[in-house]
Image (cartoon, rainbow, N blue to C red; front, top):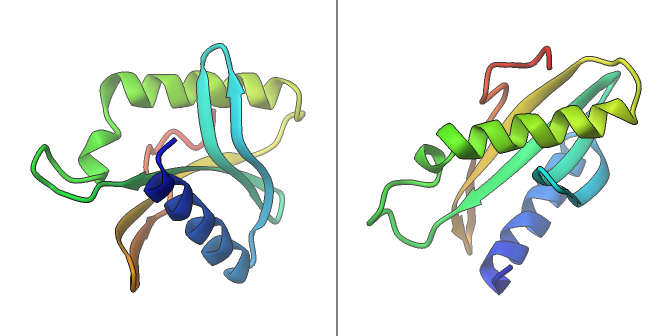
Length: 116
């Protein structure tokens, strides 16, 4: 991953922790894909996709979570859940617009398939 992407993930993890979520995994990888951040908010597991683009030339960061990317996230989350027991979950997105100063948008239930 590029340095800006790593910085974006670090800042998002810190932001979520300050908001009361417990970060339980970072860059969890499996054969089906990768989960940027996995957090816990109460009893709910929160799969967080961090998106950062320096330029919106090819579309914004939020628009890049579509089709195949969405399917890979769902598949990886299902595999993660197979080892985590039956619990509620949701998919959030952290859209990083600027790293310095930090400007982001936290989209809760971004995929809308929270009952995975």
